[in-house]
Amino acid sequence: MRFLHSMIRVFDLDAALRFFCEGLGLKQVRRSDYEKGRFSLVFLESGAEGDTAQIELTWNWDEEAPYDGGRNFGHLAFAVDDIYATCAHLQSMGVTISRPPRDGRMAFVRSPDLISVELLQKGEAQAPAEPWASMPSTGTW
Image 1 (tube, rainbow, N blue to C red):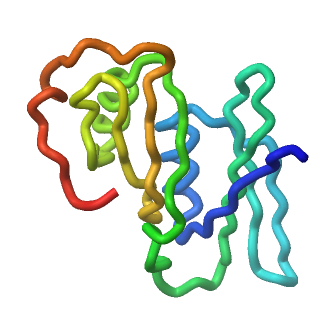
Image 2: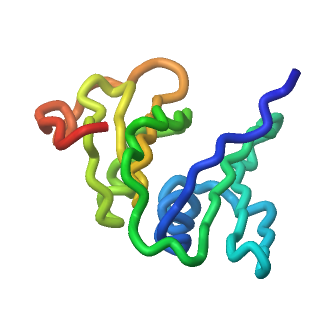
C-alpha cells in the first residue's frame, strides 16, 4: 500500500495556492476543472526526491461561505530545512504563527481555510532564538 494524497476543501483557491505554493513552496502538478460539476481539483506536492504524497485542493465554485470546522481535519505536517526562516517568510505574507517554534523544532500555522499545518525542523532542533523563544501562542491550531 502507498499513501496517495490528503484532500481539503478550500473556499478561495487563489489564497490557498498562495499559502501552499508561495508560502510553503509546494508545486502544482495537476489541475482539473469540471464545468458540469462546477468544481476544480488541484494537486500539489513538495517536489522532494522520493516524496510522492500530494495534497488535493478541492474548490467548489459556487460555495457561498468559508467552510467551518477546519480544525476537525487534524493537520498537515511538513519537514522544513529552517523552521525560523519558514516562519519568518510566512509571517511576512501575513500568516499568523499560531504556535511559534519556541523550541526550535515545531510550529503551527493555519491555511486560509483554517487547516492546521505543522512545521517540523528537519534533523535536530535549532537552538531557541528570538523573537520565537518568547512569542506566545495565538488562537488555536
